[in-house]
Length: 115
Length: 117
Image (cartoon, rainbow over all chains, first blue to last red):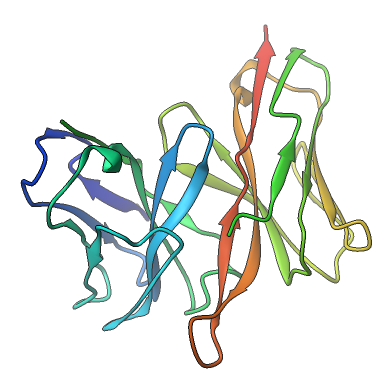
């Protein structure tokens, strides 16, 4: 089944403890992206990747890192999480390198709480 | 850089009625997409409409695009309780830090649709 898989689905952790949210897709998509969703603010893009080893900042990249060593994986790293990063996170992927002219396939989300 | 804005923010209708949601945006676009999000789940793509298209259909969904007014509408006909969800429009914009830049998608804040059985 074609899907985007995020892990973990839920995480409660403490300020400053490094964490990684994994994202994997099995559709051989070039483009992958991370979003955060907050009440009243909608979805905002954190980072995106147009292909292996090609990543760039989205609208809210501060406090996050990403890497794209393989086509299928695009992990999101919070080196020193803070409470303002408490949010619902989504990974998405799509065909092509553009990211804007193809349907995005979303994972089921990771609910992250930073205490 | 959110440029899509949905209207209304919330909509409540009876099962069987039609639901219309609107999206307005600020700058010219290449394409516009609509997504659905069930509570706490990931977004699901519904329709992509290109700037040279005026209308698209998919099952009970009808999307229109008016580039002169910079607006789009999503019509769900004969609504069902299972249509209860939030609906988002997404538009592309040219993101530039340096060089040529790249087109990215930006999402609105969504319309929350409740269909009452």
